Length: 260
Image (cartoon, rainbow, N blue to C red; front, side, top):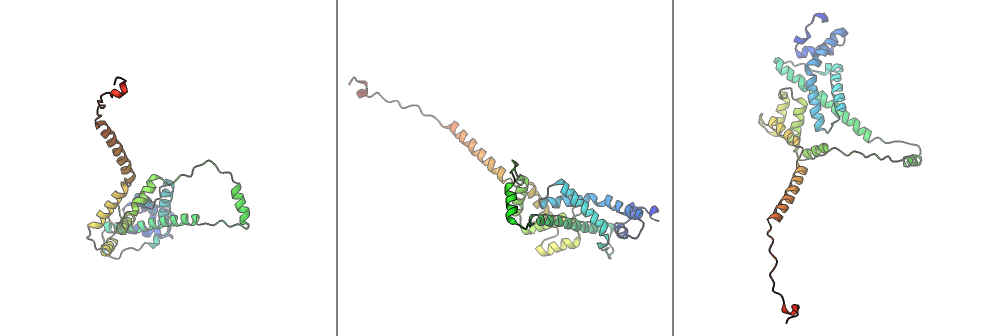
């Protein structure tokens, strides 16, 4: 039966229901997931990439792995999606699915960050700490410089520190839930409007404004450099404009000429 089903024309919620049904023939399951992957992989990768940037994750291989883990989570956990009982248009259902996928992506990113923190906090246990210390001290230091955080990472963290909690929450919410048209599910939007007492048109504007601020890469250091350059130029200009007075025309002192 699965061989004759037109998966490209299936409503999105029916597609998820087929992916959740692991009792069907594998060929039908694969076809359903392949169609779902075709429809939503670009959206999931976009959400993953944008959220990773906010979380200061810039390694492309890590971003690809997180996106892969997120789409795999859809395959294994499709039964967690709750279909709507209301009479909604296919467009509204599509927005709900995008919100669900945003949560999955956000969850995978958080898992990645938690894993990194555990690795940082991992304690090396040894029976004899003195022997271990002696071993560490015996290692010859290599002439390898430890690369500091990139300028972009530093500036992004600096920029985030100057953004209010309200603007950060609104921006993170949009990056997590927004669909390809830049909209978020109505119930999530209403929660933001109620929490911050905003009109419906303002959250999207706040999100755009916040992202523009971050994309400016905090020109503080650049301004400082420009300011120093301007000072140097102004000094040179002032020196060029300074008039040099002629030497004083002093009459010879007769006592010094030996004629007096």
